[in-house]
Length: 393
Image (tube, rainbow, N blue to C red):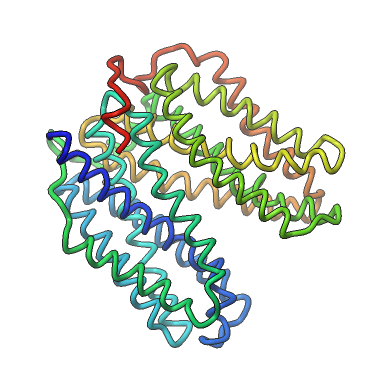
């Protein structure tokens, strides 16, 4: 693939990833705006988020299966079509049922896109994998930020957020470019293939990093507002610090990708997890308000682990990697949901601070394990390097 064509495909995939990231998180910021129009109850928000999350997990598995059997272009186009249908239906909703169906369709599209999108990016930039996936991940980060800012548009404009997203996704459905496809035959036994992936040490290492990032994102960061509000801190200030951390992570993700290409996936993961534990303990153990300012590096460092995990899993898989990516992503979502549920039960018995400290024990344990294995080859980083200009658009 010539460089111009490769940049075109990379841009296309990044924009679709942006749409997926925005669609995945619209409900939380927009729910207060749509609640009156659709006569919804507060409890309906949790139901919509649960339906969306389950749909994403199902879409992850479906995207992996389709990519294993058919051309990745079919899965990507199907994902864009589902995002378009879900967003348009959500924007035209007049009841809980229609908004729920719209969110299910959007969730399926988001999940369906993840595996083939990530696999294609890895296929296009095999020798600068860290920076490529980190740059690609900025699309998702921008989507999360756009969803957060959408809450400031006003009650009368929430429908247009969904409609604009759906219209853009429809354009990208129609204009799907030709993608570089995987070589080799599809796996004849999907369960056997998944077991084979798990036996690979590089795949297990990538899964570990992803689980750590998910746990810290949903528990440590998720409980941060509750921890500091209990110390009479303004919720707006905490939200602003989390937002600053999200913005900083856009630069941090590229730094993590650069590190991965330089020193390897396990060593990069070990460094970032060590920093995450240090910043987390600084947030929780130092006197108030000193610990409050550690929120920014905790959010940033946690986000930096995701592209490292994604790059490691792609590098650990064979050329037709989509099924393995789908299983990996679904497993991360399930594990994060289980850990979030366990933390909810623990909060009935322990303080918020105690639960957050316990959650930091997971990356600490991973750091101790990585200290023994960080310098062993896992296949997570190719031996050949290329100039960063091949990745950055």
